[in-house]
Length: 256
Image (cartoon, rainbow, N blue to C red; front, top):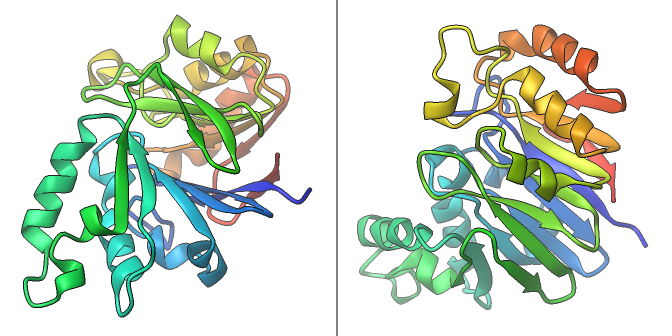
């Protein structure tokens, strides 16, 4: 079976240097599932990926993980509306959906009165609960240590996990145990002068330790706050992680 996870974008905060913010897409013969939809993600999806989209998972409502959701809703609804897709995320995502729809709905177009609500069927998932996507199996979630409600996501069938944003915790390590592929944030190269715990992010060393202790086979290092830290970040990661580690970049494809 031909199945893969493609990194669409992995910038923290905003798009930069032609790199979108956070987004990954699972592609199989059954279609595609999008995980996070930060700014720049939509224009980086292929027509086939959009046409075969079966569901969208949003890990939390920070802009660099969900800002393109409105743009995606417009694409799904205009000029001709498509069947609503499942939109899975933590319950607090609903406030963003309502706010977006109130701001960006188009009163003169019936199919765009409430774009996100009309393009998607929102399915709230409390972090820590499991959910299922038809044709793609079961997924589990983990509550992340982050300033707002955030969930990491793990696939049972395809054996990958995406941390989204959050600090290192023992529960996250347990959650990631045994994954073949881990896409993990490493927002900062180190903790010098940074409020890691309060801000709810990981350093390069913590990212590597998470992967090492969870016995992950392949690590994708993502969500760097400053691209100029890439080299130093990867040097630190490779000192503390013994298996394959790569710097996340748009277009990278991993079999799963």
